[in-house]
Amino acid sequence: RRRPKFLPGPKGICEMSEVELFRRGDEPFRSQGSDLYFPQGSLTSYNSCAIVSSAGSMLKSRLGSEIDSHDAVLRFNNAPAGGVYAQDVGSKTTHRILNSQVVSKPEFDFFESPLYRNLTLLVWDASKYRQDLREWVEKPEHDLFTSYFFRRQIIPEENFLIINPRSLWELWDFLDINSNLPVIKNPPSSGLIGLAFMLRQCNYVDFYEYIPSMRLTRRCHFYSEHEDMGCTMGVWHPLAAEKLLVLNMTTSSNEDIFSIGKVSFSRKESCS
Ligand code: NCC
Image 1 (cartoon, rainbow, N blue to C red):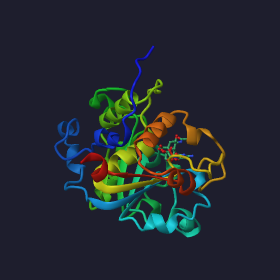
Image 2: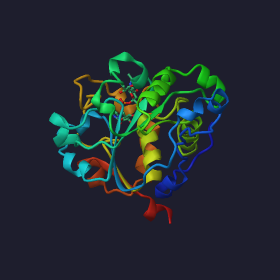
Image 3: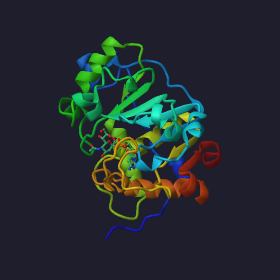
Image 4: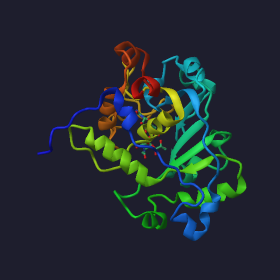
């Protein structure tokens, strides 16, 4: 039997591991001479940040203008914003977290689609637990590197970064330590990666429809009719464990969480 564990409460956000991004000089890219493609300079900090999950329950939320009132807005993968979705998910996007399928599979149209322009892009790929980085670079789960290095050449001014997969496993370790049940050994979803990243950049973070509200639906995404409860509860990603942890770390009221559909975090209040 696993030893009993203790949930961390609001202070958990201060102990959550950092999402690390590859920079110039970082191995194993330096030895290959390809580290020069990584952007230099520090990332911007913000006061208030919104993270918008792609859940079907964003529909009919009318949260758009509240989301847009934040200084930075993070979205995931190919989730659209604006247009017919403006009222429910808002129009502003400053950051996107992409999994490596989105940058490598032609159906996502990564080079042509306006979804991926004029914002900060972070891409991650699933490595094996504690896998040597050289091995991962040689054989990533999906080939993110071809698109990455090509795009860095054609749009050098873009803020486009690769997440160090080791830091994702550190996030997984944090999840595992703070979970009462066994956690499936796959990297956390883009959702938890996004939260860990934004908690470092922002004083205040509001995450919309990560914890399902009373608008809970079988629909996977707000932008598609496809139904799959697994998108909300988790199949490949340890999503249920992620959500239990996040619910335990927020200080939001039940009204905010289950009626409005947001969980909020403040580094200042929780970490000082
Ligand atoms: O579906 P996805 O996730 O792009 O959703 C982004 C994040 O929103 C949260 N979410 C989404 C739907 C839902 N009903 N409830 C939620 O809480 C999750 O936190 C999720 O991470 C991913 O994490 O990158 C993922 O990407 C998709 C898919 O690759 C992309 O959408 C591109 O098509 C994965 N699905 C498949 O590979 C089939 C999904 O497992 C994880």
